[in-house]
Structure formats: structure tokens, C-alpha cells
Image (cartoon, rainbow, N blue to C red; front, side, top):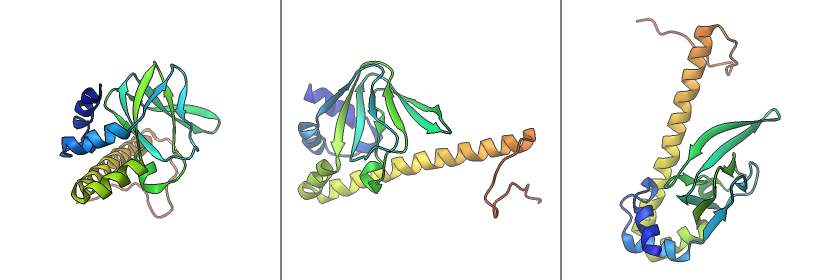
Length: 172
């Protein structure tokens, strides 16, 4: 089973170019978390100290706002969740609920520290990969926000903007 987990992690972008022996170290220490259908792995506002990779099953990322729940994303095998907790140590920004029985590999900050002590070069590469993943998600969020604001402007819907930022067509 460890070999399957190693192979799965080798396909995950966060572990891109990480040596197999380093991934094996992570897998050796990483617990497998089981979440039953309808149960939460964590809730928005919970303290976060780990990231997770879905080994099997599906989960939904849910955000609460004004008393309502909103689906942000559906996740499946190989998807990473919770990487921000390894950087900012802030409360979870969304909830994660299982939409079917799900198994996840848990990677903690302590696990990453172990890699730091084992192989600084591999630790640095892993940190760069994590940074790329967080940056990719930020770029996607920026693009979706921009598209929504532009569509709202076109539709004549009221959109609140920062006082120094507005939508203006650039004249050439």
C-alpha cells in the first residue's frame, strides 16, 4: 500500500521533482485519515497544521457567508487541500466535507521539518512547489474575481470596489 501512496504523491504537482526516497519518508510517517460520507475533515475557522492529499473519494470545499454555505470546489483523488496552513498558521479559510467515504494522506509541518533536516535541497524544492500551488490558486481567484466584476459591470449590477480601484476601459 505504501508503494501506491508513493506513486500517487509522485503524480501530485506539489511533489513534482521530489525524489522517491523523500516521498517514501513522508508516506512512512503520514497517517491515513478516513472521513465518512457527510462528515467534515475540518471546518472554516478551525486551527490548521496539516495539508492533505486525497487518496480515494471525493470532498467539497464549502465557504460560509451571511449565514449561507457556498460550494467553492469539488475535490477528488490526487488533489491537495490545506497547504496554506503550512505557511500562515491561520485558521482554515473554508470547510471540507466528504461527499463519499474518503481517505486522505496527512502531511504536517513537522513532517516537512523532518525533510528539512534530511535534505535541504529537497525541502527547498518542496517549499517552492507549495508556493507555486498557492500562487496558482491565487491567480485563478484573481481571474474569477475580475471576470465576475466585469460581467456585473456589463449587466448593470452594482459592484462594490475599493475606493481607489474601479473598472475603466483603457482607451488606446
